[in-house]
Length: 351
Image (cartoon, rainbow, N blue to C red):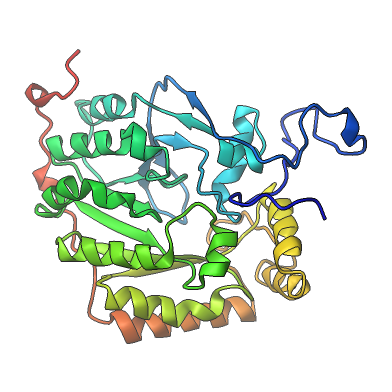
């Protein structure tokens, strides 16, 4: 087996379906750069024209999302956002977690968007694609700039992250929470640190994520836990323990999705699974297939995130029972849309 690249989720560069050329290793001596070399992170600054996008997926309802980064150093092997990197001419594999597009003007674009005369405030989801608190955020502070805009105009938002860096912005989050303007979800997939290091190599540990939930809850910021994705044979059995731990640390809500491996993610995950869990590869791979009609991927709205079949049904039953046991009577507060103030005199970025 080729040398394993530590600190990276994917171990290969998959073919980009939009490009004619592809990486091959038949004649490795002729390559200037080995396909298996450990890549360093590269930053590409994008002068975006818009940053808020309308989401039309029936699975998610009518909502809006905002992503200050494209690509993610966290390197989670299962990440559905990997496929979007191909639109930039990159690989969904190693390129996704080492070539990061940065939208430095995201706060200015957000302000322009919500100040449009026809805008009626609805919660905007920050980072429905890649994590807004990935490692680069510590230096660039684009997400903090976005929070300043939301706070300035008292605009509602939701956030999801698996990085404890969110606590840096506790001042802004508590300010928003006082007016019921923010919901935060912390992604928690496993309490097994060995699995976490392989599956989500550059993320905060489970302990740090639980302490992040605790700190947010203690500060009055409404926080829930997202146990996604649930993967048979790897973490599905942890659902009760995950929800109990999250509840013990102050979580008010919980959500989950079933793993699906669309596009290049199927090849990436299969390679990762064979290298890390050869003893259970067949079991995990076939159980994933059993939840998607014999395939590891599914694009059908209403079914793709929930799966189907006996194993998927049993997993959802386990989640519902665990949620009822540990989170009964809890819930996130309703957003207060009436607090929004679209007064141009408040502009953070005057034109």
